Image (tube, rainbow, N blue to C red; front, side, top):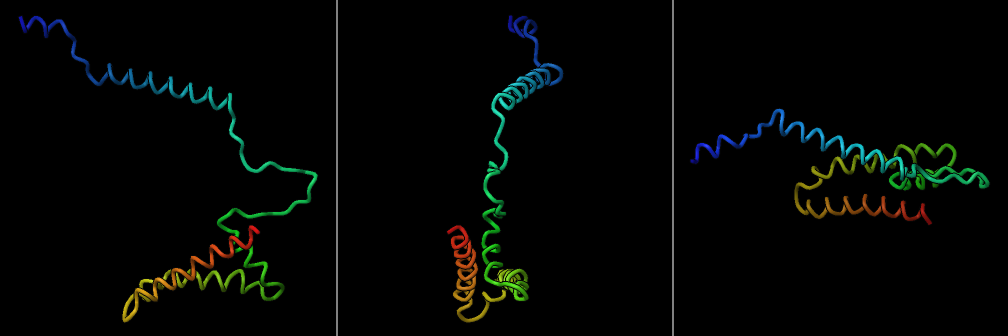
Length: 128
């Protein structure tokens, strides 16, 4: 009796049974996604007010550099655009070497805090 029960049921295989179910489900999900995108299009970028004069504002992660460039004018712009950011990057690269020796961990923490406070402080000052 057990053998006749197993013979009546068909065993589902990956191909073509499960594969057709997966493809059908993916197509339905993709169609729903297209419908929602067409009904509710995303807003891309900032809204432009053509009555105000144009003032370029960089993204938030470049605000510190934008403010730093504002401190150096004329022939000193090279210092604000190249030298000080290069010092920040070199300080970050040399933290593993600063970490050695006596009070090495404290010196590395101080170097990291100087960089972090510099980035955060210049970013906040540029927003204000």
